[in-house]
Length: 397
Image (cartoon, rainbow, N blue to C red; front, side, top):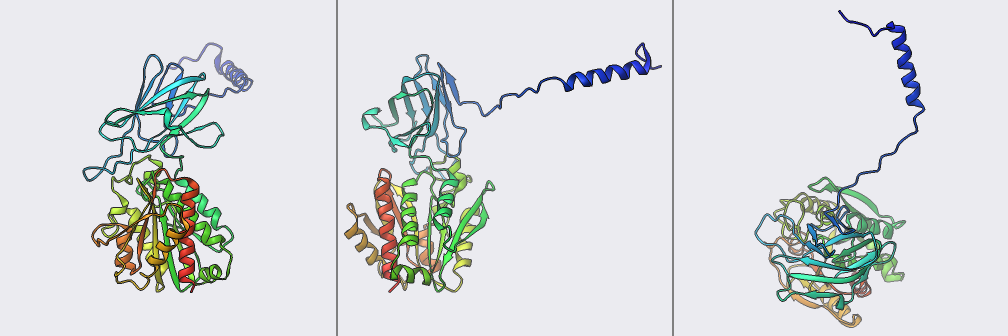
């Protein structure tokens, strides 16, 4: 037998109505949003990595407030990884203070001078006097004033995956380019490219195959900007004659994942051109070939960064109808830049680089443009602009 509450169904219904009315009159309560926790917190300090392109870090805070941050690399399919120890993290301090932050590279050595960004200010490189290395250069200790609130510390000014795609979109706005999703990364991010310009010949440009290499990205920007903005008869003729294929972010997983070198599959994309085991290189190469069609590809420029500014090019006797562009490019760099780059000529068809693939598959000189890690933004952009001018002057003849 089911026993009803004393007072019967009517009383129960009345009580339910009273409770419903009371609930309607309660004030709305908002709960604080719970974001990802800091990787360590103590002594009024928090270290956070919950943003795109943050490094792969763990950390500890000593009782006095000194911070130690490990600088770790992504898993690699093959043994060894290029020593490009990317770091990027955010400090949040309850009060202004003098801070001591040690970057611990374990078996790797310090490479990138630290940059900082406070609040809405621009990125600034820390003075050399703020940094001290241990004897083996495996630990770098930064001493700096820390403001109350947020301060970002990074190996280069942070540029997540969407940044260069957005920059390219804006630079090409109103110039007849088509934006295309040409594929998807291993983690499902869009691979975005841009195609525009005239019809009978093709140039290709890309950057950020390797995540930390943002100075190469700046040269790419100088290159694209000059191709678009130079306003003379030769430039107009060049744009009318050449289709331009641009891939501003071929490794979005690696960039946003804070990787040193690889994609999210643990593979160096610039050693995968030819085998095409990764969706990023397979999609990009297929798209380039499809967009080129029957047109002649005259050059493929791939912008990177390393410990010096250097150009890697195929030998001058390579079987390409446009190999004569290389002396023109070298002359432009030698005469226009205050610090002309070194040049290295070689070709390894089995090396897996975009440079080698361009010569083998497209019969075009593939040119790897490496910018010094510490080059200024102005000098990186100037090199890219000089490359664009050399290309216009040679191919618009």
